[in-house]
Image 1 (cartoon, one colour):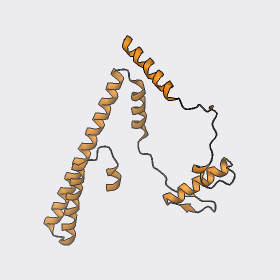
Image 2 (cartoon, rainbow, N blue to C red):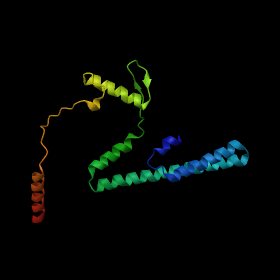
Image 3 (spheres, rainbow, N blue to C red):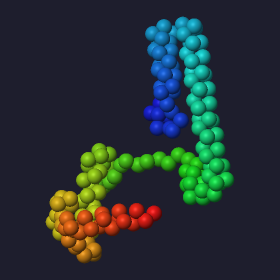
Length: 165
């Protein structure tokens, strides 16, 4: 659960301190399960939960204020983007892919290798093992690099345009 919270935008260094405080209280309780340590652990847990709840509320208030500001200044793109992010909520990410045999692959290098193989088959790259070394053809015509005199001429032209303003 702690790793999940650390990915939240409202989670900061102060929250890490609260997590350490909770961990220390839990260690004390495990070492000596007396009533005072139980009460201390419960108090620390309540304090940490309250702190996280308040941080999350403050972040939500700031997000809503930002959306209201975008609405007032007619910044529609950011308004709609913020609303859609807000409405999405939790989006689980799947980092598992099936290989050719149907087995699940979770290692990032194996996943990249699987996608590379899949796309090479999909795009029918004829026997090219490393796509990075394949020759890439584009539709744009090749334009030769400008000579030094052409560069100087372009700079002089820009300077004359700037001088007019």
